[in-house]
Image (cartoon, one colour):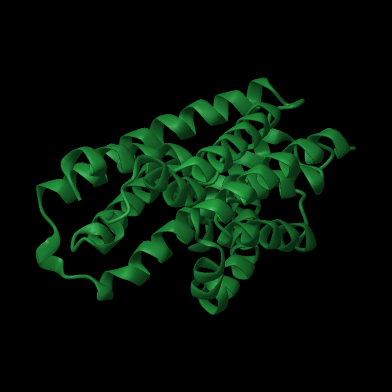
Length: 273
């Protein structure tokens, strides 16, 4: 993988992992559109992808550092009303993480092999956009539930929504935010819960690949991937949290339109090349 290819994929990973537009779908589609058919066979592809994911996870950990610190203190037994609420929220996150972790372990390879072709990823990107748009249109509640009052059933439902992202073209953050607003959370709380959920999932996915790679493959290129993906992930998270706070109505609509247009355009282009 060349420096330019690694740089572009690092930016792509840092942005699309958090934006509700499917990072996996873009990772499958973009190289095909650019004619980079051989990069997945290169020796440094897997190490660089792993470092990109670690960069994204570290960015999320830094952005939500106060939340994770409060979770740690609450689990260690800090006795206060806020401590009890933080401990409860942490338990909800654990519950919500279970479906994607279990299904990912059992089905991830099968799903990737079955659906990780550029054309199918483009089709699912269109479906992802339609799903986001339909979810916004069908939304009935306006933040009637908060993160402090959400029940375990709702957390589990959000977890199953996140598991859709195992299919290239479906967005992890998009389906998770959509799951959150369907159980009654507003967009800001849904996004916060989605990004907190994503942190251990992304760390776990990256750590799962570490034993498979040649550690001698790490170098300055990997460091660049780590830093660039992390910086763009942090900037994306900051932007999205402000966006969802300011746009509680129809916040997912622009991303839905983007997914539909990008998916249709990719289908057309892939049919021409």
